[in-house]
Image (tube, rainbow over all chains, first blue to last red; front, side, top):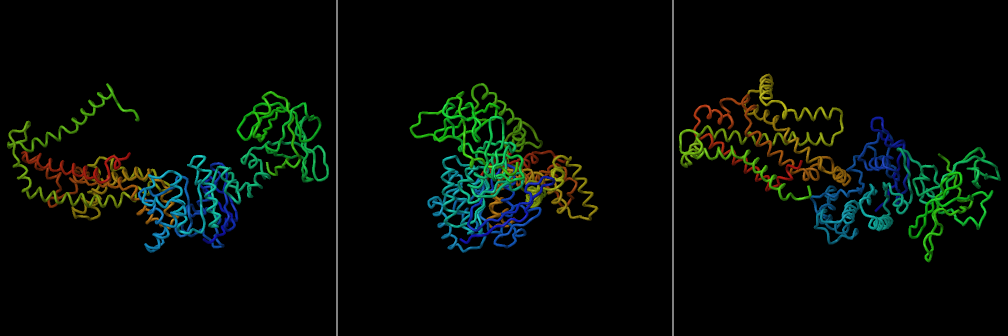
Length: 364
Length: 267
């Protein structure tokens, strides 16, 4: 299968006065898997449907391999699409479902039959051809939908929350499987999801959307470690966010005063900034007993009391409260022989972290 | 309702159901009984037993001619109201345009307007248009009256069809028309069949609109029945009625056999 380059140029969709997608430009490399990630109503599904041709943009264009597709009707775009509820034709058998797209292309019966059996074995359902969708489990139905989408050798694969209806275990194994298949076929794939784990697991590039606009585009690592905005910092994973003003400059960095008991050392801060928002991931913070270390007057270090402690198997969550009332979330990985939680509720502790963990949020 | 009725509740339910059945079916049974009465007037209870009224009716040229006309008219009406009603229903359910509610109300209005007025209005309009062929006028009139039934049943079954099925078909390379034919229509087949049956039956026994549009040359069954009723009220009238009742029953059973009544009337 050949890989396509997909490009969105200033794509917008308005419904009356409501702007669903607002001036979105995006380039997707051939063979990449891109996840459009965001809360419901952020415009990600509208975006995907405009790429498919199911929705006509109010303005802007979709290009595939530099060919303008905006005026090409959906049935001539050659896209494979998966839907959350599978959208299998209930009155047709698995085979008839898969052959549908080939019939539409006028392929001869014998060629089509060969293709269908190839597709069935690709999705590991060779013995299920004569069954009806209602006789299959959710996971099997989505495999049929995948086979049906792949058999037409689409220019790209579009996934609309494809695994949302499956339960957790099956969803995770399907994520890995789908990703492996997509890599093997080198098929340009665009996926819509509101599940950050799904996006992190599957995508080469994550596009975070909010209110119809692109919030941040980047790899999983970039999005997680260097969120560009407060929204991204809070939407992907958990974040401790602090705001403060510059107390002292040192080299290219600065000390940011957040509260009387907490200051942050940041290594890079534009000279023009007089205040800053800093995000610290919960797993970057180290907790120690109050007696062992003194927090006094050191940056990136604060006295706190344990408000809540939750044991979650491989990780413990601590919710700390500083004297001025700020909350700090800490995730601590548990050791295999560890006897439960390391700190009890009410205990006085010191939370500290390294300067590189202080990430400046550019937009807030 | 997941729980089965039992005990006193079940007794009440069965009693009310039986009472309603009797209330609805008794008059029909009465008509059937009167049709085999060996007397010159309609009486109940019937006196003796004879099938001679059926023999008479089945040799009655007027009645047979009316049957032929009514069946052809009902078939034509069924086809016409489906051709008009199915696309209309599709537009009402899938369309997003200004005035949708108003158009829906307009299309369903023949269900609410008094049929007598609809018939009179149609007669005047068709006269103005210079349409003098009674058969054509009847066909048009019946399509107007029966389309709302088709639209209603098809709208109901269309609302149950997942729009993603159509989107999936289109991404797989089917244009709008093929998508409708290959994917949508099989999903709504039962609703279309039910609408068609309604159209046939409503057309077949429509009196108030038919009355205005028929003429002496083309007289459908309800008019013949009424004329007979007024002239000589002998047991041939219940015999004709019984034939029509049996026809309706065959229609319903056929629908049940083909698509399942419960599915067809899913609403």
